[in-house]
Length: 211
Image (cartoon, helix red, strand yellow):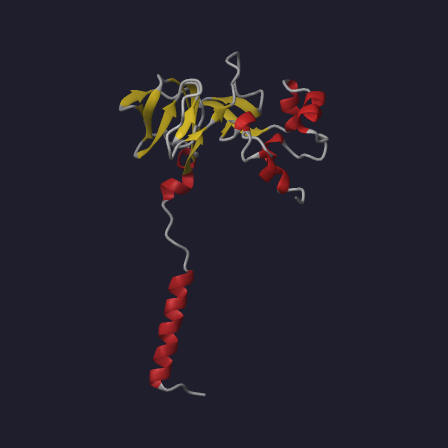
């Protein structure tokens, strides 16, 4: 059955509009391949001594990680293999701008119980052991010619090297075994809630348990 020219034109226009509506948006390659592991943008930190951890998948083929600047001043990356960039920072109280190449964000260092300005969020950062291989306590690691290679996080048993199973069950009122990994509730590098929780306690519990 042949369609009339006017009706055929309407069908073509409608198909074009639908295709445009459902066509995936063009991706900004930098946002897809680059991410700040810790600390996140507009984080209010209670301690100015922390590790900046940045991941740039575009350097996974051996390319050099783009330069880091802190408050407009160049700062060196440590000896980690791509795609990971790690820098140990010590910042005074106040706002600071961190920049990796053209991507930049702000963090705030607060003192004690100092109120956090609107639009900022408190972020606790997990302590990192300064002795030996700092990352090996929680991650699979290996040395390479280009620096330390940091792999996936180990199972929750790595957490039990510092936190006992008995302590876990007392604090959490929850048996340990059903949980796949501490990262189900906690941020391994940092989180916006106390005790490195990703969300308020009730919201986390509701993800597995009915209210």
